[in-house]
Amino acid sequence: MKRGFILFLVVVTVAATAPRATADRAAIFVGGDVKTKERTELTAAAKSIAETSGWGAVTPIVTSTASACIDATDRAKCIPKLVTGIKVEQVIVFQVSAEEHGAGIMKVVTGWMFKPDGELVVADRRFCEQCTSDKLIAVVKELVSAMILRARVPAKLAILSMPTGAMAYVDDVAIGATDLDYSVYAGLHVVRVERLGYETVTRTVTLTEGETMTMEFPLRKIATAPAPDRPAPTPRPGPEPPPPESTSTTIVPWVLIGGGGALVATGGVLFAMEGTEIENGERVPKRRETTIEAVVTTSAGAIAAAVGVYLLLWPPDTATKSETRGPVITIQSGGAWFGYRGTF
Image 1 (cartoon, rainbow, N blue to C red):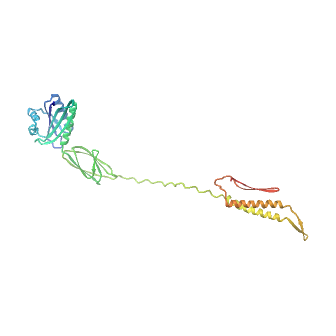
Image 2: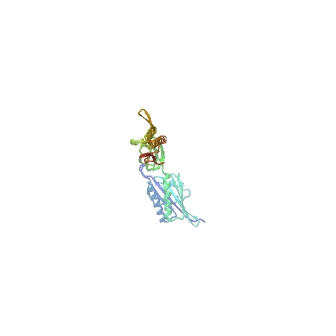
Image 3: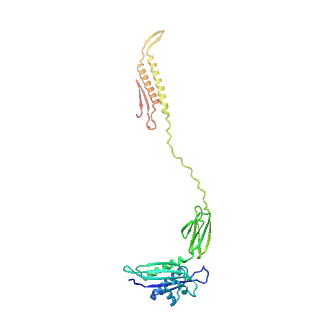
């Protein structure tokens, strides 16, 4: 068996005598089987949300006629009587019922918004589980805010840019590329237009309900600084050139060949000195001791010439061996010594 109570909350929105651009005024009525304290709290909650939404709010005394209208099942028919003598734009009725939910009680808040002639504009509902007084107040505030927002007539923005194709943002939300039309709720909005290569333009605008406004954004190109001179490229180091060929590697072989040839010739002369000489018109045998010198000289010349030919055909690697190398000839009394100094 369901237990509960029904609380009716009526909010009557009263139009001010000023133009549409000014804030509306809401008259809040609370009826039904509720305690005085709870009625006062819910009335204050609805009033604060109405004022936060830009509407004024008053709290008239609920008459017996108003209570009967609130309790009626077909309340749409009695809405015109409820606002008789009051210039209003909307009438908002909230119904709060308590129902069993598991081991506890859940409260359901239903809201309707009517035109003064009884035409339904908005209907919505919220639930409050394990509902306390504070939770119920929060639920009523959220529902009042949502219904007022839905009842408002949206405004329209026409956003144009020169050149076109810029990205437009309303309240930091991208809405598309210009030129375009965009619907928003009345109030203060921030519009930003961006395009690559152009300066960003940001403006604020305040719109009233149903207003249409055109916003033009001439965009200015960003001045570009001249590109800095690029430094000349650093040449990439190449392979090191081969070391110049030592003069000694080309001269020494020829010196040895020439010197060796000269020694060989000298040895031949020394050999030729062995024999006879002519004295007083007669050939007289005469022996000279030049045989050893001839052999040594001829041998040294042959060896020197052979070394010269070797060095000419196979020059030494002077790039990898820094020590002095070459033939060594030593002439001493009674003979001559020939050698080659270097690393092999």
